[in-house]
Length: 431
Image 1 (cartoon, helix red, strand yellow):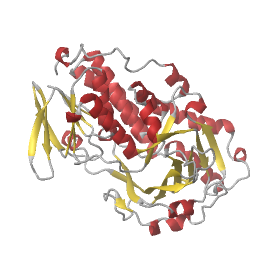
Image 2: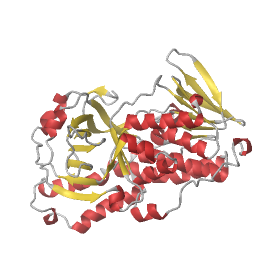
Image 3: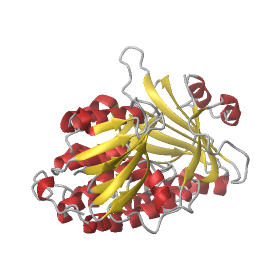
Image 4: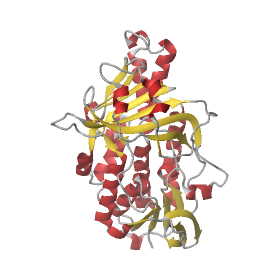
């Protein structure tokens, strides 16, 4: 018997590596036939990078991403509102990383197969539900041909995303994800980095925003890097749009006119948009926080547990923390109901607060405050807000999301190098 994981995304793969570290057998099932480096850029905060570093992946991260040195907010006129150092430059013991999501997933997958064996991940099998008895859970699977099968295990972890079939079985009345009116157009472009060369910049306000940052080092010859960008326009929640049409190709005519005048001395946004090879459109959706993640020997993780708006660079980071904290509780309590409940008791309240905060625009709300006060036009930001208010706004979100500098640097590792579950699965308590 083993641990079963539905989904081989960032959460599931990090959990598999954690299980290997603590001496548990684990098997993952992923619905796509081939895991390829698809998608666009994401940011990983220092608390998540700490966990990946403690899994021995620092060198692999260096090969696929770039260390973010600064985050900076600007009004729609390109005027600086707030900036602060990030990662090592801010005094953290770990960096903040900007990386292509697909490359990160592929790196984690390769690490899982290298450490756990090539058979640790079975692709082409989608989780459709589960059942369980006194001996443990059974995962129900189906492939593209309509063939079905089941797998037995001690524990089942649902890391199967915002459309999780396992979450839906636990919450049959929940329905579709919730759209708040925002539409995202996401892409990467080849362009020269701006400002520090490793700055994450946010421009605009709640109803129209542009986020951009490099996800690779600049080429020594051309000076060009892979620049990730997100154009966001918020509509009324009852507006007609392609709410559930995921990863559809984006039409530049739908959003470029709104950004045509966003040309600043440090960044030409229309030019950056114009060099993208492929643009994807996403409705910005989440789900309401749940009252429970756990049913017997089955629990939720990552976007299956707490899908949130991509604000504050937190979705992937929180998924990584889920994986590590569940691993820590398995070390403490073995393969037992107590481990799953302790994990949920720690993670569910914390992530529920982030989901709610992100609906209120998270740390990006500072741009809307400035927009409300002066329509984004000012000579000096201190004429609009005090430096203390700006710093306090940034600090509150970091504390909420779990990467307050002093707290993170001071706390001991979640899992030490000698931690094991009862010496291995053979001695672990069964659910």
